[in-house]
Length: 393
Ligand SMILES: *Cc1c(COP(=O)(O)O)cnc(C)c1O
Image (cartoon, rainbow, N blue to C red):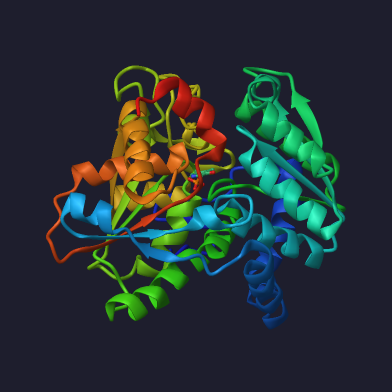
């Protein structure tokens, strides 16, 4: 196991399952069965076939020559943007829907902020002919119209969360409430390495295909199966967890996690959890989160909707605390210019989430012989309006 957890789902002092008693049977059913299910050969085979023929894996590992020249080292891009639906999220939703089927569930619920996880969930529900309900804050529904329409087109029902701040946190509460009321026929697909145990471990395993491929691709391209650096952006942390997974025990590999500092670390408009947060319980696990002095969750901000999350997964809180990974941050402005730079240098328009990881290249002192792998978590089509409005190119 590459991110070791104890039997209660703790990574060091982070993780666990902090859930209302009413939710215990659902989470316990999943906890007691997930490992057996995902390790079954028939599961592995079906998962592998769908990743290959539906998602389009393996994704290329591309040596970005012009970008490399700019930074004086060898930079490879792991092209998760080329997955079906345009990002890494589908690796996880495919895995979880196969788990749901093996648990005998007929219905799927999910919550979504910007709608990207909602779309990835609606996609696999259509593929498998399963009923799909996606909870989304009323405010997010209004500002993320294209993703709402995509979900509907894919056959999902989008339910508006109208309580509280009417954003992701409230959608999560509604999804939890729904799950409590439908414990037998429904599986809840969580979209990142967050939530109560076993979700962080399960999601990390599904995303670990990213570093599994990087290893064999690097062996072929560089003659060694590990890089000097792996760099990824962190919202909840699933693409980073997947990219780090098989390198975590390999101490020579430097793991770099990049958070969004929004308008600036101390602007009150940021999502840089490790820089600003403290330990606390969020979405059912003990982790680092941004909170006020009296423990209220702070509403996060980032130009990229996918990084706009007040916490990080517990495995990342542990990577931070143990100093195994180096955490950095990039502002909206730095991310925008890094995204524009990649577009012009390599002909690849990245998602604004990914652009944060690219911006971190400026903060690293590379040696000429260094090999760095940057996880290109998603494509930038969805962000075109923002590039047009806020970018200079
Ligand atoms: C959702 C998303 C992220 C952030 O989620 P993680 O769980 O941290 O990976 C990053 N990049 C893209 C393209 C996304 O869609």
